[in-house]
Image (cartoon, rainbow, N blue to C red; front, side, top):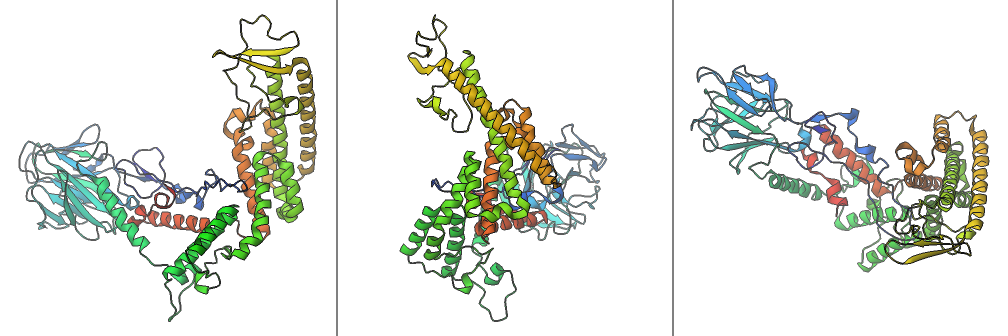
Length: 595
């Protein structure tokens, strides 16, 4: 993680933010709206090791000069941004460094210094220094320090001689200093102008700290670690480097042994041709579409490949990526699994809709081994969900009863078949108060002589609901009592069957499931309660069931394309954690997922 303050920020990726750098790779989401398609994994489900830094390691970025790591002849302002020289002569240099070293995971780091001294000629040096650099010498003169000097425009790296670099700088100038960890070269700017790269292998074997040194009385500088806009367009500079890095990545040919996880033999052809790359890519895409049930899209994709004259190389050894047996790209295979896709996605949609009975029935009929695997763990989870759905149903009926008996609670206009158990819930399963329909305070007879309720909209117009109030109350009360009894009996049976199950996961889920009865309206409570009872929990269970079905068929629980994406994201993260600067510019989320 990269931080500028004690607050938590997420780990490395590509873009440089002078104060803080955050990024996270998200799982792919699909917008295909086919009616029989199952949903891709929701964003709340962790991917590629959840992209969490090993041991939750935190990287901090410099934000101020250190009060401790400085020469005593330098004073630091209260905000930590100003340095002033308080020495008596002009022979003794005094250096200081920032509070934190620079993590290579940021890719490119940059800061600027505003020269505030009154003298035209300065002996100020700006650059980077390692932990071992002395505070009694100019930055760049000591080992493990690199600096640009204001008096002569020279630069030096661990020596006092230095070499010509650019113009001297002095009062009124803004000097920038940066390090590119993809090349381990430094660069400087002056008043917003890029002066070019300098030095080699900077920071490869040591931590780097922003560092400056002052030497004359009354010399003063003010640093900008990103607290305000830079004079130099660092964003453009970073974008150019990102493009260069990404072009190198995209220009790297695919390697057959690498795809198959083995070392190439001496005379083996290792690089895939362009046509072979297209074939491998097509198989990955097709396996993803089939996995999530996008049968129509998969057929359209195959047709497009055929129209473009792309050859089927599924039997070609060089095209076999064999990532958990991704499905063959042959049309005959697609024909054979289309009915299975319809069944599987139908089951998934039933769970998402809250119809657990249908999901259980279909699974038992077509995929019975799923309910038997892992000592019936999936079956147990589905039954727990069934109990939750029963409790939610009783809550909805109770809300309808209150809406009838308490005129102050607005009631949505019901469909004509509401007396026969019609669904009065909105799309997310929750009643929503409709303030546009309220009882008229001026009405002396809210219910007509025939017992029909009338509601008047404050925006004009009457909303009449042809509901026999007394009959409706009696019928709804009966529904509530029946639903409550069913939930209680089902819960008692469930608890009795699993009370002797010692598995921690089962005991924890029992506790969470039966715990929702303590809440008046679980869906409105928020926090852990809605996590158990809400729509997200349905989607999570639906995806788990989908994966279990696929596993029972000997097929991968994740599509090969998704597995490849996750593995690559984790590798990029690990490279960044190990200090490989180029990893910061391999932003897979931006390149592949953002539109």
